[in-house]
Image (cartoon, rainbow, N blue to C red; front, side):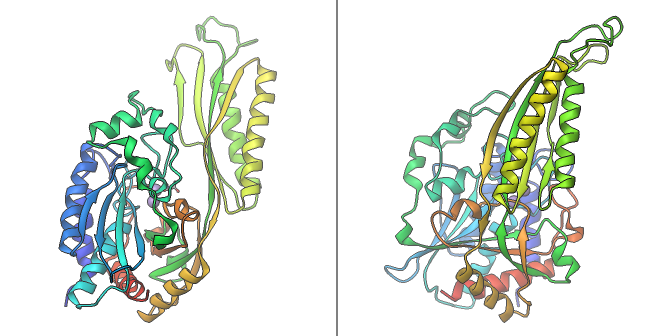
Length: 404
Ligand code: HGY
Ligand code: MN
Ligand code: MN
């Protein structure tokens, strides 16, 4: 009797080694670490009887043909991580369905439809200021202008893809025809505390929150920290600090809003000079698009009013946004039945994190399966899902795949 949960553990351990050095997992898209992870995933996909290919956006695709003329069920998640992140976010949603297919293969089960398992190159948007690159390409909503976006070394997304051996000009060909697709399913670690609080191993996602990200540049005037009088200073970091506090205040006082300044840089960033320029991110998430949009507008207004008072210059740009996406009722009911068949209650819960699944909502029905997350922590090395919970998730996935 195969212990599928421990099979998942050993695969995820191998994949966690495909990382830059340092705490946790750092595996950014179109890097040697990404290449190493694709080698591990390719072998696992072939072991599950899948025909494997790499698409023009760097998505590894494992395909198993169903009966002639059958439609295709898309299943997958992202291979990339945040910096010093965990070993489960994204990649577990590729490993579990591969093992679910291997389990079905071992049982000699015939697949009722064609299935593709997808390992998207870039969901997090950590290396380049965009996200959902691979899933949007498959869903047909990829915006080619993102190819000119640059990473912190100044390289463009296009160059990174070409050096990875890809042809970005072929990305437009990746979009699937709605008539051929049954739906998109994503399994993912919950990244929150609800399943643990309810003592549930797996849960069914009701909706994925919306998200928007802004880049705000505050410009003042530098000067000698010891000789420049305090009166009349145009200190960019003091201005930025007011914005950081306002982002937090918006989050603390608005229902259903998460507000975060995650990245901030200072120039000239030396102890004895007044800060000249500060670049900071402001991110808002909410299940309500209206709440999120109002918060984005509010921080722009606040920053301009603060800058006028302090004689600073503000450049505020919305760099990214995703609408909130409900999961498809019928597909989620099918997933609930599969979960209940393996003994789970089928608890329903929302997602405060965003996922590749949100990119597919325009193409086909979407559903998500969450796996319990110890202490609810994610985007850090301590992220953990147990072999027992992953074993149950693999059983639920195999029931779901058979149900079409
Ligand atoms: O940021 C998110 O919610 C996801 O992990 N990309
Ligand atoms: Mn993530
Ligand atoms: Mn993720």
